[in-house]
Structures are given as structure tokens and as C-alpha cells.
Length: 530
Figure 1 (cartoon, rainbow, N blue to C red):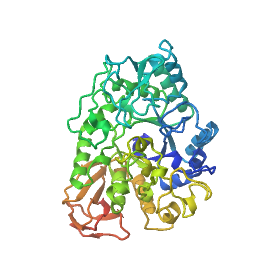
Figure 2 (cartoon, helix red, strand yellow):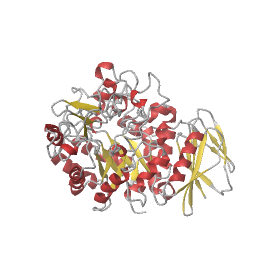
Figure 3 (cartoon, rainbow, N blue to C red):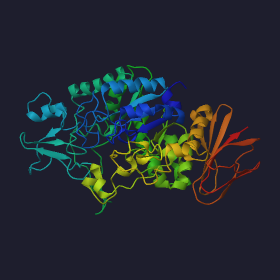
Figure 4 (cartoon, helix red, strand yellow):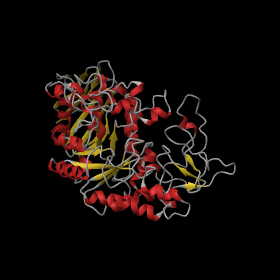
């Protein structure tokens, strides 16, 4: 297997929160460069950096006003050039975020498009006449507040589409000039040496050409997310999304050894279509399903088997347990299960994506109401949709501001309350810490072909236990995970000869006989089978 993105581990950096280098309380590109040695020691293979482009920051960079420059908050283009080179010097690949569904309403393209109905760039965005009653053209809803996705523009007397904030107008990928301009953005960064892109909400980039109403959701009730009042039949994952995927893939294929990762929040049978009918779509359509699956052994096993069963021949799987839009793993499954979750993520077949800080077992932060930054929480307060808790700064030391920024600076979001103990320096000096465990796990994965490229097979296990085999040639590893807080006894499923414990989430080895493994509460184990 020759592709780095198949055997490697991707590590997501939310740049605002990783390392501040200039004392303004916001992480930046020089800060990331400063921490490349840490990432190399951790053992990851690629870093994915959330948007660092010029932006009014209505959605913290996911409203881009210039795709081929750097926001001064994060540094300069010279800083980016140095970061790309330094990452490669550390044998790290660098992946950028590409935001193709929409731009900022301050992007020059949109300012031209909005200037008049006959402007050459008018069709670069999605404009429609009012409905007969003068209202929005259809019932499509915006993601952040569940209100109409159409914004009235009085000077030109039409509505424009915004799937998210009104400050994020959707672009029209059916327009060949817009499409060419967007694809040239990819070429710009590939030419600079970027190794791939994570494609923001890629499955929403093509909309129904007939602009049909989405059907109402019969299960929606007051008090639920207002966006879910309708079923998104015509605003995401439309049949012609395969064209979008191929357009991007054709550009990627102009370069050697690049990867395209799509943000696609769909169930497995729909997700896998994004690989393309001839694997000519996205290399890795992100598989988020583990995030939403109940943390229970039977449910997790069923998900894995379903996903493995629908993958196209030759398609490479991938797994995600956390990102900048989801509550942290340790907060979702409980701190006692954080190591088990990490062990699962890094031993399943396929490419894992880690989220910064999860190697420390970071929990969601507590954000006082007056410090809320996320526009989602501001638009729909009280439903717990805000994403600030999982975006708090990375804790490096037990110093004031945890080494993220100088003591006299004010971090853009407050540090977690436990940052004085849950930080890199403290865990580096503790051989039983989550960080040291994660480093050992990554090293074991790197040196074990069965784990980084082998096949997957479920193994029999009692209630509450997930067990599976990974095999490459004659090399076999068993992974056994106790997803409960009670002790469990696991009977080895077959005559195996000698077995050895290679890694446990605990500080001491478990009880293992020729036929039985005694699992402690919240314990995960990797066994070598002779």
C-alpha cells in the first residue's frame, strides 16, 4: 500500500486554538510551526488546518473573502510558505480546508454579483425571483437558525441563497466560470506544496436544479432544532454531486500523491457513493457515523460491519470521533472511556482523523454566556448547538493561560478549568497519562501492518465488549474493548497458540490465560496472536 493517506493518521488543528505566537490571544501559523516537533513526536502523519484565509469572521473563517491569501490574524503568506516547508521537513503532510459551498458576502465575486442583475458574475451565485406572494422562492432553510435560506436583496429585487449565515452566500457550481475559478484555487495551493484538502460540507455544493420544496419532517416538534423542520431532499447529496466530486478529483489527479477528504455527514450506504462509481470521486468521504452511534458494543459493532459491507471494492475506509463541530470524545463517552475510544479509533481498518487535544483526554470547556463566540449559539440560544466548548485553547503547560498565549494576554476562548493538570507538559512527565498512552498506541499502529493496513473481522464477545481481528498476511492482532464500567470476562474465540498483550489502557497487564482474558472496567487491549 503506497499512499500515505491510507496508512497514516490525520490530526486536525483548529488554528485559533492551537498556539498563539504573538500575544493577541489567537492561535496562528507561526504557532503551529512552533509545535511541529510535538506533532512529530506524537506520531501523526498529516495535519489538517481549519480555514486561515482572509475573512470577516462571521463564521470564524468559513466565510472566505479571498481563497488565495492569509488572514492577518493568522500570519502572512510567507508564514504559510514556511509552515508548508517546515511540515515537510518534519515528514508531515499539510492539508488545508477548502470551502466550496459559499463565500463571504464581502468576497469581491459576490460584491460584483450583487451589483446588478446583468453583472457578468451574477450567475456565480444563486439568485431567484420571489415566489408569487413576494416571499422566498421555496422552503429551503438556513443551517444556523432554521429560518429561510433566502435573503432579499432590495436593489436588484431578487433573493440569494445562503445555506448557512446570510453572510455566506452559496455559489453556483453549474456556472462554468465560477467552477473554473474555484478549481484554480485548488491548483494555487497544490502548486505551493499543499498535500490535500478537507472539503467543507462538500455534499451540499450542488442543489436541486428545479428548486423544489423540501418535504416537511413529520417527526419534528417544537423545541427541536428548527432547521430539522424539513427533510433535506433537494439541498444536500443531490444526484449530480458526483459531477462536483469528479471536478475536484480531476484537478487533484494533475498532481502526485494528493488527497481529497469530503465533509459528508451521511449514513454509510449514502456516504460511500462519494468514492465515485469507478473510485473517481473523493479519496476519503469522511465517515462521521461513529460520532452519532450510541457508545454501546452492539451498536458500534453493527456500524462497523455495515460500513465495511457497503464500501465499494478497492475503496479505503476512514473514521472520525471528534472535530470542531462536535462535543469532545471524553465529554461524549465519559472520561473513563476516553482511552478505549482512542484505541478503537486507531485500530479500526482505515484512516483515522484525530482532533487536537483528544490525545490529552480534553473535555468540553465551560463557556460563560458573555464569552460565547459561536454564531450558531447566538442565533439559536438554549438548544446546546454552540460549538465553543470543543474549540477551547490547547493546554501546553500548567503556566497561566496554559502556555497557549502569554500570561498577560486574553485567550479568545477561556482555557478549560482542568488545564493546570490536563496539559502536554504534565502528561509528558506521567508514564500513565493519556498522552503517553496515545503515543504508544500510535507507535504500535505505525509498526504493525495488521493495524495500519490489515483486514477487519468481528470476533464473538459478551454484552458490553467489542472485539475484532486485524490481519495482514500471517500477522494477526486482536482488539478487545470493554465499553462498560463493569469487569468482563472474554473467552478467546479460537485456538491461537501463544498470545501476548501488546498494549492496555491500564497501567498494569490484565489477567490472561490460554482461554480467557479478564477485562477490567473501561479497559481496552491489543493482543498479538502467534
